[in-house]
Length: 450
Image (tube, rainbow, N blue to C red; front, side, top):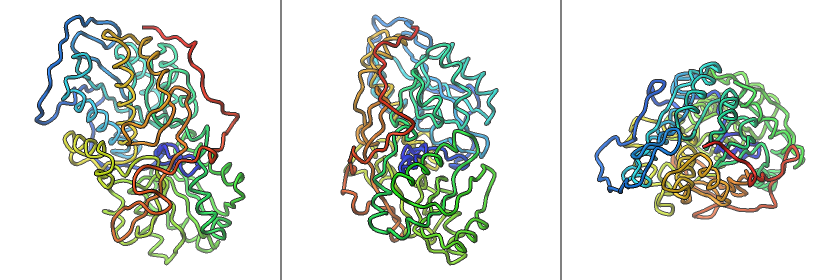
């Protein structure tokens, strides 16, 4: 799930939201994206805008004018797989539209400066430097080479609000995440559940993990530590690359090895492919797809994804939790407004959450915010859940959520299953495993330039 879904935290959870992480190699399939350097206020579509006064507003920081605030984003859109993290780009524009429909913040409209990395570290370095010089903050970045942005972020001390995939930025003092890294503290809950309910299966685990970049591979390292802590046994493991389109060889090898439980951190379309190949080979393991929740899963997988388990640290944002969690309906509405063709993936939900974290801090950073006042506000946010869209974390201290839920495909629908409650999450702080000597961050003495 890493449950970051964005970064795999073996913690099963890590991925989800992770993953998200990391989903390296996969594509969220959704068509082409805006070109590098494109800007939008996110106001696509008809809306009723509530006017707010701009009296007293000044150009108080880079990217801030009396009427607008420009936020930068870099994401893998065209490469290594077309549309890979497009959902994150759409989500940032969607949240900007949502805020702008309410009149903005102190009368300033949000302008999104979103750039395609083309999966090129040199491009990331260049774009990150330009955004650092001209935009107010980074919000919602999603790139497998996010470490390439670190020099520019650190040199400018520009706030970076998002879900880093690699540890370098995840633990950077200039980063605040709504979904702190599962590579720092892994959630054991999902694996403990399967250890209790299917102990034999957890002694014969097959793992296929994203390996397109070192950042992506960190998810598997976390998974190995979780397995060791819980006494689980991984009997087959292989890293896959972004250009792979079949897993037939893995399926045959795992079937021959008697694998009973398969952990996979590819996104929904890759998850659909893998499970179709399970069906073709009459291979019937427990299918645990840590980053598989997305709008393409059932559409592309059909009967083959029936019974697939989906660990999450987000609400079921494809509409299933809309009645219990009102923000789900808001998220879906604005995502459809910006791009009704986008196949929503977990990084869309976490990019929206990153934007919500930014705006919460921005509202408390003063009428004429600076990067320093934004940082001060971010450092006071010790409990955050994006109105229930994600499990509660502590962005200020960089402590991930201790909560998760388990969903499953049943009769062609993705639904919550026991032990998950009908709404909310299972929360057990004692089930978190600190990794690599992790301790919560203390940023009260840090400073940034304005």
